[in-house]
Structures are given as C-alpha cells and as structure tokens.
Image (cartoon, rainbow, N blue to C red; front, side, top):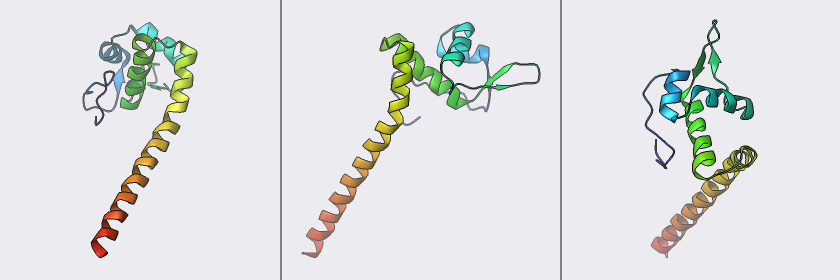
Length: 115
C-alpha cells in the first residue's frame, strides 16, 4: 500500500479471506465484523453456497479504516459513516488541486525556458 497510515497493514496476496482471518488481521472479534456489516453497507463480503463470508482486500481495508475511526479517533458509528461518505470527495478535491498546482508549475517552468 502506498500511503501506509496507522490503520493500514500489508495484507497477504490472495483474493478472498475467511471471517477468522479478517478477525485476526483487524484485531476484532468476528461478531464485531458481522455487526459492522449491518451498519456499514459497503462491507459486503461474498458468500459461499454454505453461507460462509469471503472478504476481499477492499473489504479488509475498509474494516481497518472503520476500526481506526471508531477505536483510535473515537468516532461514533454515525460519525464514522459521515466521515467515510465525505472522505472520497475530499480526496478527489485534494488530488485535483495538487494536479493543477503541478501543471501550473510546469507551465511556468516552460515559460521561463522560452523567455
């Protein structure tokens, strides 16, 4: 992972993880993961025909973000939901600002070269 903040971990290279594996990676009991599934609709593991949950890496990354917000930042469930909804928009805005600044800087450098 590029931006290794405190809640991100290097995950094993596999497509799906069982609930016990996710529980161990996240450091929360399986019942907490099942509860978070009901509260955070973006956590949506696939199910085997027998009903066993299979989590993707993106599910685990979201679970780790949620744990960080709830346990370390002390957000409420509702607060974490709001934060997760607004975060992508902030990231997009920030990245586009950086891109515009980079373009502006490059153009100024080119202008200096041709002047």
